[in-house]
Length: 142
Image (cartoon, rainbow, N blue to C red; front, side, top):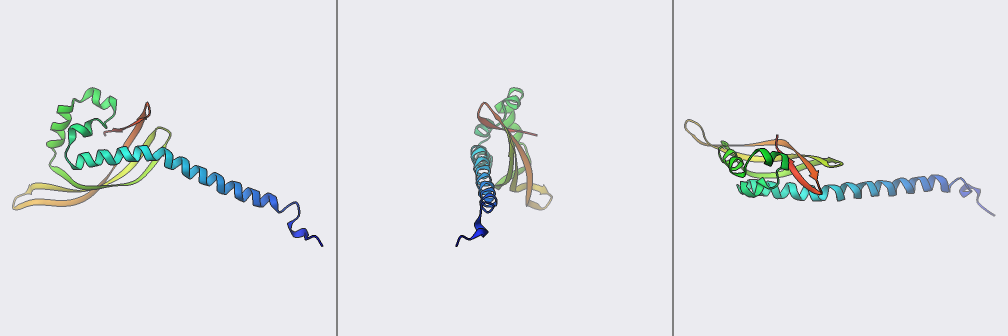
């Protein structure tokens, strides 16, 4: 005897569920494939800043920023800051077409900040905005 519980109506909900799962997987793959190149650039830039290689970090800045600030001026600005980043990690990044925003967590030291205090250590977080220009991701300094 044929079981009518799995008649012509059962496959439609099953197919809809399967289609939703497949579309969700594709969406997740798209997000990973879009964010992977920018996340690599973000990490490279952070590593250069932590190493205080500001000349190399300058190359990660947007062409618009670099058109108005020379590498020497950028280095001078970075070295003159009272805080020195000593460690850092990338947090969550949110990307849409051609634009990504990432949260960066840093540990920093300020030397000679207060009389009698040789160094002050703390943690902070800030957001970076990255733009894709001609297939390359650049940091847009704020």
